[in-house]
Length: 99
Image 1 (cartoon, helix red, strand yellow):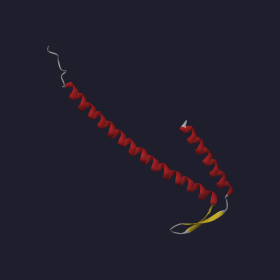
Image 2: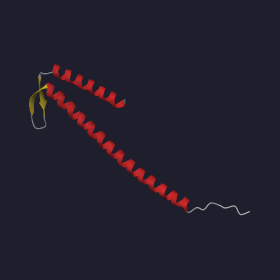
Image 3: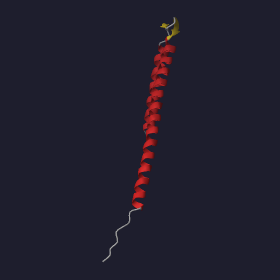
Image 4: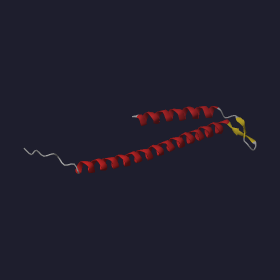
């Protein structure tokens, strides 16, 4: 259900950005480090949103990758401890009653 809500919010956000961009079509001056130029505001808005999404997506992917590595490390540690514990209990002999 969470994925559906995220998809719905994404569609609503994209629709709001598209409407906002279409309304603002006037040319604007954009200053670069090496010069300046005239661009339609719609392109400036859309490129800014796209680059922002890519940056946030990249940060999310790095976070997911680091969490996956951590999970693998913890699973390996868990396996090693289980093997150590099972070998400990294999060697343990149950006491016998000798009455």
